[in-house]
Length: 615
Image 1 (cartoon, helix red, strand yellow):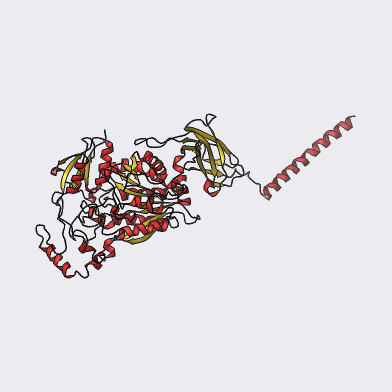
Image 2 (cartoon, rainbow, N blue to C red):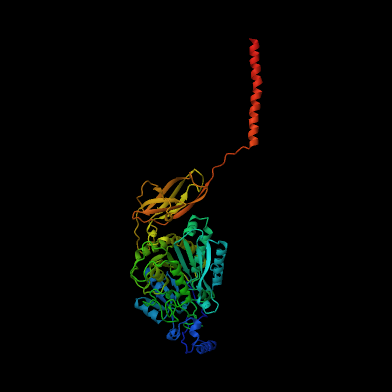
């Protein structure tokens, strides 16, 4: 039985839905005189409205949105497969999930309810499940936008040359002079080691109400930076790879969610109503690859999945698109049939909540993408580490204009979506005790394989890496041991092929991708004949330089797949010096020797003389 989740709730003083509006029509809300005056003012300023709100001329008038009331309903699912398909297709209206009783609570309009009924699902009105919002101050584990930015700035200030904090664009509110925020990216990479380097990009909190996402990304950055020069894997990742983190991909919307709103979209006033809590664009339906192709986003401006008037219409989306195209090479044409090359580099993960899922393209169709097998292999490997369910990002219905479809479809980058945890407003105890420890290892693994994500995940992984001594005197030997495992895949949703481990090797200081020298490790039981093998090797430090060294270990399976590298530090110390004598000490010793010799001569002479006279 799946575990139950409490689910987020809306403050009952806040209306479940807002009535949408069209320029030139009244706004139906109680006490709306002030809003009506604002609407009339906007009408008078109609000529400048598009310029102020960043909408192309004619776009606003073209968006005539019908007023549609939403309902709070329970949608029952008979199995996990349908649970996940409903969650993927209707996550825009998701309120909470009860996995014990087997239902989702959705805020759904007539179109959504019609689709659910057409799929043969039981849909029951449940107004008592209306969400009650929990404000961010009740969650001390989740930093605000400003606290997130301050933490990132502090990392960069304390680790120059290793961390940088750059501006890559503006939020919508900043772009129109309403305050807002810079779109900031945190980059972790040792500037003193030459490139080019493979890259992992995380985008976080693109949907504002998903509290756990940005804190996970920040914790991942802090873990790597704190581990540099302490943990061998953190060190080589920042020396040889790059980690890019857009910690707040929707900062304007996030501030609304922090204040106690069930906010999802950005805050663009041009759509729905300037005062509506349903205004804005769903940024994860606004990306340009196959935007609006397949009914996977709404054209209703007040809908949770409103895709915007045009692809990349929003400044936040544009910033992400521009940045991805700047840091990742274009490795495939933007069609739907040509695969990226097997040795393509780069991994992109868009961090969301909730659902405990690892998703990969396509979302707009059930057909697998050209690199579908390799994406599935990496997806299952990532899901092994966080114990989530891996699957292609298609639910009961398509989603289009999404981040992961863009990352793969436009650039050929291995692209994924994580759905963290079981709640939008996850309890801090769950975040700190489950989500963090489960997901930090999967992000580390994603960083490790970002050099060749379509190849490396098929190989065995290194676990239990150890030395019998991590500090040696030069010339001494150490025993290096590890376990190579070719079976570390999630088997929750299908079975990944595994092979026997066939070979293991280690490198001293220079990794394999930099043409280091491989040194063989042997099977602990004498033969490579199993999918999980203990390996070992005796290494001597004769001729090694004094100081710390890093050992890179990897394995190959019988199908020829080399797995991800893991590393360990070894410290080599100089032999103890023999104490040297000063010239004064040496002189005293020589003097003592001479005096001893002279004192012995008279005794020998007296003995000789006595014997001679006696004879």
